[in-house]
Image 1 (tube, rainbow, N blue to C red):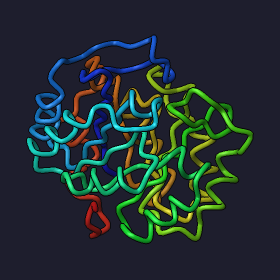
Image 2 (image 1 turned 45 degrees about the vertical axis):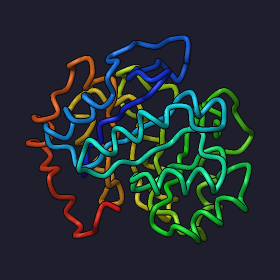
Image 3 (image 1 turned 60 degrees about the vertical axis):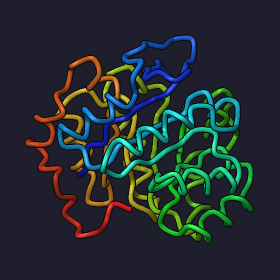
Length: 250
């Protein structure tokens, strides 16, 4: 199981939020490139980048920083946040991003989702963000009436590489992942699952790995930045240098 460090970008800086609240931010660095290099040096094979401004505004707002990150590291970079058009998908992939995460589009624009999956099979991830079991969209500023599990089942026919499931109530809270919800997601998913939200200790990662081989990764943010978890120690403990499946990350 891969442990994936997160870089959340807001106004060009590396930040962490509490439960997705843009007003509840902690700034960790003014140099996102240095942060990305740090995770690469410590053994990360995949970095998860989110354009927080873009997620709310519906278009890329930290593109320069993302392009700089991609040029500075030699690992897989996946990007989400505000990707609502095929032109944006193409722009990111042309810039060197390996795969992109679609969230709002999966619920609101199936034609775009289908086009993206058809044009770039294996490079599109589903961002399934849930609050109380319901799908949140537009940078978590709105919650739909659609359950996360129902949407996941509807995605079965799309050429999606993996699903990232985030429990918003756990995000940035260091309270542990929502294992019950993740277990349901794993049972219903046609795709590999990446867990996100609340991971704060190695025991959380072991619990996620125990959900089965379909859980191929876990995104960790605040615990790494606050020093609650040490990435090198995680790599050693979980042997994340190899994903154990023989598949390429991209």
